[in-house]
Length: 483
Ligand code: ARG
Image (cartoon, rainbow, N blue to C red):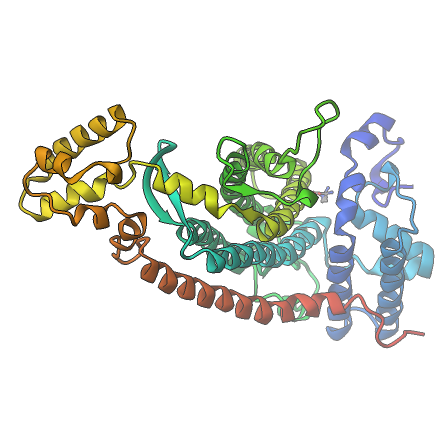
């Protein structure tokens, strides 16, 4: 029998039951659902809405349901509808009709919103942790390769040599923005909807701030209609995740490119590659490719939920049940991607000799030659033209710029001196870019130190906020067995 069967005279059509059920995916919310219920029923006791005996009985029952769910010792069916109904049903099977008092002053609408806030909050904390692990792997590689030079590219054509650490630090900066977006979004996730009832509040003298405190929430929703119909926090998460995946995808694209025979700048560890069923020689960067591949699907989740929400009148509508699968998938995929990228970066082998070759046998030092002429009063446009002609001449001679004799330089401009050979040296080219945020080795060292400090700030944030998440989780643990 359905918990809402009173006003019905017929059984639900079997296909309707199947179509409307969410239990097969929202069961992932069981821990959050039970945390919310324990805080709610404790508050009902504190407010004298339920007798303490009933409260203790319900809390004990909920903790046993949690233990069974955690152990996988449950059989859930479409007829159970969703996780909220399933938990209540299991509770009532355990403690009898008193279990029916749990839903006093509450609706599934504020309940599901609370579950989602708890779930998203925990995982936003986890995603920040995962992003940080990738940053650390990048910072470690950067530390090891401050003086390793690699061609920097524009249009995927060699442009100017840069420090390899500078390249890695660009990704650290991208991920820093992601972390800052997550930390900012956390403020809007860390808000309790419970107590909004179905849409308008409740007739019981509840204390929403007490529930917020028990669950470690920083605030409560101000407006009951907004509390039950807001999914902005999920959309925000999905948009941040989309951006994180975009960053991961660009990084992975470079891993794919750099590990190809054509580049051979890096070799990925065997543990993070797979082979071919037909070609015995193959070692494929599947993980990097799959991260790149999953990115599109995660963009899809963002667009799907934005579209679901755009036409909904206030307050709750069943359409909103569609918020979950995309969110679960986005969180699972971004977290496993980050958790693979970190060790893949940490274990990759950098082929410094290949990079050195690429930097030396190249014309990426041409800008510096033009700059040197400009420094001697040659208008830059003219200097550009002169060096362009020199490069063309060198290409025709099958030589690098530094292999040309001084006479050749002088034939193109009397301003050149034998200092050209120093100017053309890749390390000189790199160190010449000594502007703040540039690739000069001294700048890179300073940038690396700044990035490490910011990562430590994030650690402090993670540590401070874990305490609130842990408060909600502690509600699940039977620290004082209840008779
Ligand atoms: N399974 C529902 C969801 O995910 C829970 C809320 C149901 N509320 C309702 N009034 N039918 O959105």
